[in-house]
Image (cartoon, rainbow, N blue to C red; front, side, top):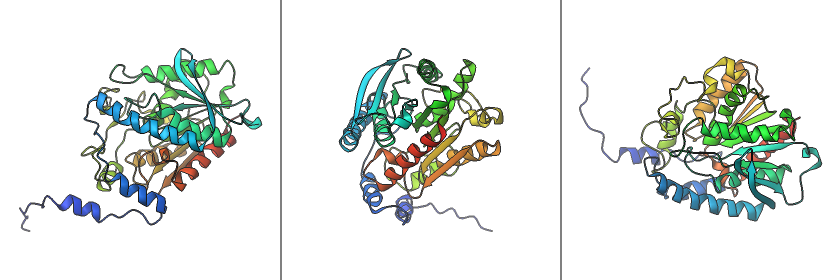
Length: 330
């Protein structure tokens, strides 16, 4: 067999992108937003922290304002366990069913951004629609801090809330980096001798390194520069300093022993999310040790899609989250 030495034309990657249309199972609203997103040139992860924080700070602020317009809530800025938090409650008051329950939200942002508004984007719809009190944690991030600083902050907030709530009445959830941190909190709680919470939500990120097909598929379906070339690696982020993929402190679901400690866990991602493969594997790991694990993949959608409340799929995701915590918390 003669091996070809012909070079692939430079235009081939674009042709490949154009050959992968948005899923016909996605909503018309998702199709419109997807087309608009492909025209956005967001900063890459290789950009400076200042540039990343400036760009996503504006984006998260606009999203938080839209969330407040759609979902009436009250927001109190304060601290819990010595950690800065925003306490989000429904304008009409916490529902009677949730009077003895509380949720902790851990925002996304690659462990580098998202503290000021990202938590509000993730907390406002769940507080309003589910009738919950949601404590959005402004945990320490890189490059100023490194692992396990964020886990320690989550544990400090959780420990103080245990003075007012039973462990089984506390739920923790987050998206992207926040989903990873939610899983990592189980390790920190165990090391501190704290009881396990009632339920977890690890969305668009979980207790495993990114990998598999998803990072490559995500890159093929967008022209945006926010997807780095090659695989997205959590361990390579400044916060983790090159952590190995088998380090249970960073990726607890590599270990069956740690997987057995997980309470009921909800996983949500888009089908074109670069984190989808890690969630499908995480779900299988939890199921293999008889953990109540529930996975929902939204066909055609992207990383953290439910940060855009105009999508009908976002409404579905909010409903799944609220119903899950209503069912699973004590």
